[in-house]
Image: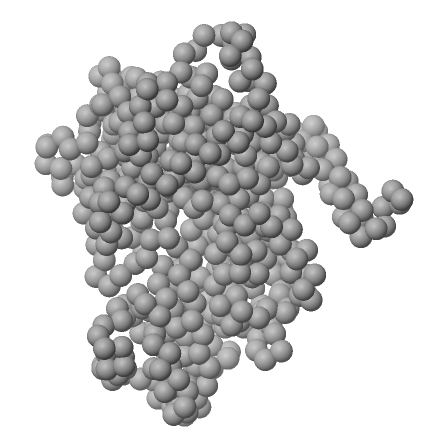
Length: 541
């Protein structure tokens, strides 16, 4: 699937500690709910022992997201932190097990789902930043990203698979035109043979009913899209790498945000006004989140207290070192991280763990410069296109690439956005992004107590500060030496050389220091007390 700025880079808008855990799991849960026709009574979840999820699924939001999706909730639903309890409270049965199956991807979900009529199984992976791929259904291998309507039609015994032309003609006759069928394939699983019809719009109910009434199909399920920007047949983009962008630009020195607008219009089949409107919506959401964090946040299952209010007080009272706009950036970054940690609404840019460096630096700097939402939106678009190059060639998932994939990407994107705010040219924008990512290659991911708070807060601040420095260096003519594409591929190569323990497993780095282990134990005891109190068995009277 071709990368979209709003699918893969600037989003999702969500609650939770981690986009690759919570937001992705929620999308997997939504697809699973549709597979079960909205009725899920029994769930077996299996995580491979060699992956990242056995040690992080409960603390980084996989459970919260998955059961929110199975309940049919949105990624911003305020009930998400209690989704597992809500699922069990409605009569659902849950088992979570660790297995030895050698899944190649560290973020692999194996689900077995049941209700009174059917049992289905699926395998899906979280690929970073909330993006997913469903890779197996009832034992059949497939590839599904949640960017289309997917209709699954189980064939009756003895029925031959349909010819595409025949079904296409019948669809056109019933719908009065095209329904945008992007693909038709036949799969064999342990529940029998099924036809997968991938389409831009839902298949007409009359068409499906006709197949069932004729005895051709015994069961039908429609899995609805879970991504904000859909795909369509014959989709294309003008470029996927920085090198291709420069060839496409042909020395016209087009501002990066203009090229981002061109890219996303073509990728999503959207108008320029629609793309700009989506970006402005993100700006307004982010400004609200920053204000919320500065005002102060609270959440019980948390390592750090709210620290943004004290930073603001000290800043306004002249009690900090004079760092100019950088102090305002630190405040905005801290505020966003604390909103995330309190399960407030944030925008994963490009992930929840690195949700603050890019928007905090762009919005705070724009305000310091007296710029408005239009300039903020253009800066975010420019940043988003840098993210496209990273997502197309590497990954945003810390489980794949360490924090260089999250914080490093966010810093590169932020640097491009800051140069855009300053009116820099295309070459300066790309140079800033390259220098910023170079400075963060090799950064590990080692969240303490599996909460995405520490050292994640400091890494977001560092990413933002690095972006400011690299932006100014690029604006003054510093050379990046290594082109951005080569830096991205270097980060990918370094990721392959990085031990698994240093890629968001809570098994290495600061996460295994004595203090971190003590914090983990304290939080586990606190959670146990809270659960006991909720059941009336804590003895508190």
